[in-house]
Amino acid sequence: MADSEPSTITREDIEQGLRSVHGDVIDSAHDQTPRLVPVVIGLGVLALILAFLAGRRIGRTRSTVVEIRRI
Image (cartoon, rainbow, N blue to C red):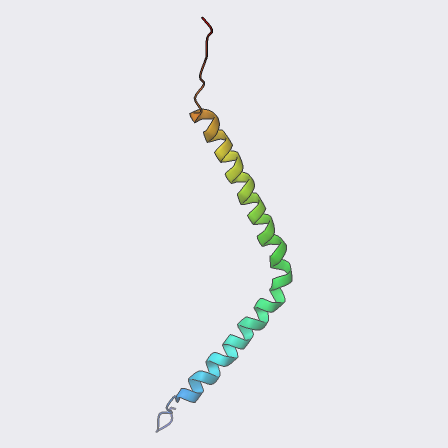
């Protein structure tokens, strides 16, 4: 059923496995990059607009109105 002598995993086996996985991940990332760039830019612009609107609202509620009367 099983081998009488267990096989040992060497450092080279681990390095080879990691290199193959690393290569697959890098290839997949390079394939997805053209599609992700517009999405990231869009999310950045949306975050800036939301920060602007939130700051504007806070500025309106915390602003002090000073009334000057002439005597």
